[in-house]
Length: 495
Ligand code: BES
Ligand code: MN
Ligand code: ZN
Image (cartoon, rainbow, N blue to C red):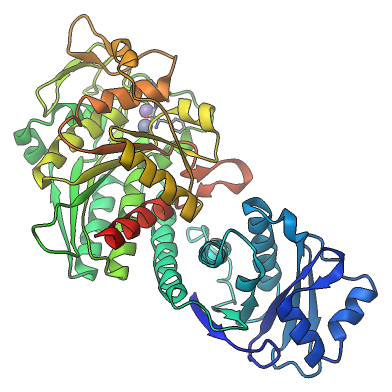
């Protein structure tokens, strides 16, 4: 999909469809008024007849209007200007692209940036691009007869007045972000029998091949053993698939600049291990590598943008399966940090692979480390499918992440990392247990990780509720690629 920004009069720009807004009560937006005049009041006629009332997210398609260069005109209801908010704006964008995708138009010109649809012009453009990309995304590549690709290939955001120069950059960065999300979604949706740790490693190596400034290296189990990653390796023991530790180093700035390290949980299937999960919806545990997939998607996006920043992606990846060699409840392992862990539940495996990856991350002398993980079912209970959980050991980092979440509409909510929760991880036999009981399950998981991240600025994102959708709409969402890229864009701009 191609995106551009144009300035021009709506009747003059040629395309398969021109989109203009109509407010509640049939009040034409500025662009619609210009179009109406050129089309001998065809729009006001339609409104007078009652076919378009301006109701929020309603649409009406008109064909071949006199005096209009575009083949079609799509009227989109914007509702009451005073009632436009992020939710109604997204509904309007969803309806707009659904209507466009129902036509054979290959390209479209949208006059929505000027109309206050959303917080500001940049916000509207970002969400429009994400909506368009989401609707064009196909998840049925493994069906014997996959559905047809979307016909809509090119979208222009048009304004009557000269658009702000900064919008072009916003658009290009958002398009790169959308392509990153597409990679994340594709990897997330792949089944566990295809998307194995070796498959993720191959994808990371391919990303390194495709971009000169990404260097990928993959460590095998022997190398991890040498590094003392007893915690990570304990998770893979029941699996026939070899575990991998992937690192992708993106160099966009001087070597002396400390990197931001992104650590993504890459459990390509989480059965729970010996602490086996119940059957229903267990298939969804193929999504337990969505943190890893978001790191790949984010690195691809920032490499396409050429962000002037150093970023390292670290992906610990393996399967969590039961078996004769599998780790058992009660087993005690030694992590790379030297701290020992009593594994009371083999289903709390994410923290076991992350803690060694977090210790390993020290070698990059990081400015900041952010881990991304589908870590706890409790996070889905706490925040549902709207916000990802966020923890940070520094307030400034938390504030910056919260802001990036708002800017990209990939929102997060901060939870406490207070010491008061730490005793829940006490063990009689090891330095800590890997679970803290049912209460505050998301927090005790973060507290576990906090014991391995004391030497640097760190944030943890629990994306268990936001990385994929269940039920009829089952599929990966591409989150939190928008959040991460926005944070990195902001960091690059602050340099
Ligand atoms: N990958 C799961 C977390 C998860 C569960 C994400 C359901 C999304 C939906 C994680 O490895 C896990 O199993 N966590 C356990 C931890 C518990 C044993 C302390 C959980 O949340 O039940
Ligand atoms: Mn688990
Ligand atoms: Zn898991």
